[in-house]
Image 1 (cartoon, helix red, strand yellow):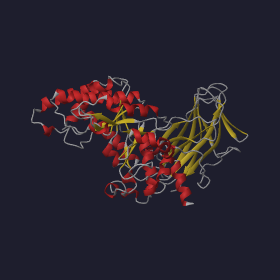
Image 2 (image 1 turned 180 degrees about the vertical axis):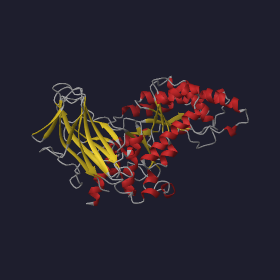
Image 3 (image 1 turned 180 degrees about the horizontal axis):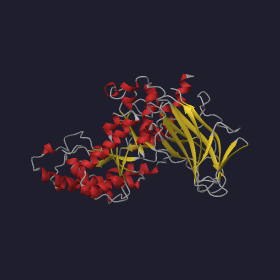
Image 4 (image 1 turned 120 degrees about the horizontal axis):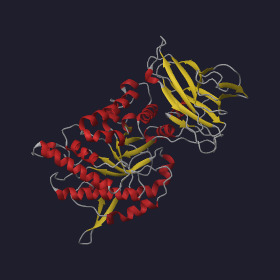
Length: 521
């Protein structure tokens, strides 16, 4: 029973999800999880294991390593790792990777559709003032962008960490600061043009972005924004702050700090581009979350010591997804989400981990019979349990019970609502089944408000989630959606409301099976 309840809890931790019972339910778009780990696959590994990986790994994409071969003047063959050679002084040639490109293009991806070409700052031995060095580097990134585009990848994943030597530090040169800043900005422009001219609508996924000011990198990134076309997107992976985050507050602070760093480090002419074309994609360090890396786990566990590792993983990834603009990325060192590689699967290290992550992504066909439903008359088989409220600007609107349904008719601004007693940090799953009688313009919005013992609003937990429908076809089919909420500190009651707005004459929503389940750890 404990295992069943844990599996249930893992399966519902998603800010917005759809629970389907057949082909007549339409699924709204979801946020995405990307894996970047010590076990990130090569093209050859993908070719040998893709079907198995997609079957077991609950993710949406991976960072891919391209391994090629070059032949020297003596006819001897040498392995070429694009990921660790890209920032070298030697220009790589497409012919080194031709077989890999052809192999990757032959793969049939069903789940891993958000893949990125993996690059690093290695060997990172360029002289910032040497045009020849930078011509080779920019040629390599143009080639990476070209391969990513040709292979149908979303873009380039760029790890700026200095693994081989001090690449970004001003301490590597004794030239005047003004001169250094100018050349760093110029190199950023060159690097950006090499990438964007080749792949104009690229997603450039940086594991971190805009660090402290005393670095070549800040000026370099300003150069990148100087040439950033409106079609491209920068993704800030917010690596270190993400590794330290476990609560909603932590992830929001990480997001705010990213913006603060941008406003401090960017030149004024680049701020608008940053705000319009940079998204937040926090990191989750799996080894720390699961307690495998004891040192890093200490950054996360003090406030959540009662959580099991699997439970904690679902909480952290859920909260990261909630805070992200589109992506969350998972970093693993000692484990992997699939077998066949150098590292054991996470389930072998911490049983239940893969199912837990799968539950964050795909909460399908859930059985919540063991979780208490706190909603009264959610089946609408009788009148009562709900307050039907109409604003004065909606004189035509009305609610009508019939045949185990509630119809909200011609409602410009109204709601059904009821109040439930709650306790801090409890988690609830809302589910509602709804359909409409014709092609419509009305909206249905689930709103949840929290109040403390004095009746004052607790704003930190409030949310409004619009139910998403397919407006183009099958509009009379039932649409079942689910939402998760976490009770904020200090709240003792929760007002649950389904708002109906902007319905026209003759238009109505039918509502059924509205429940709210208190989830168990």
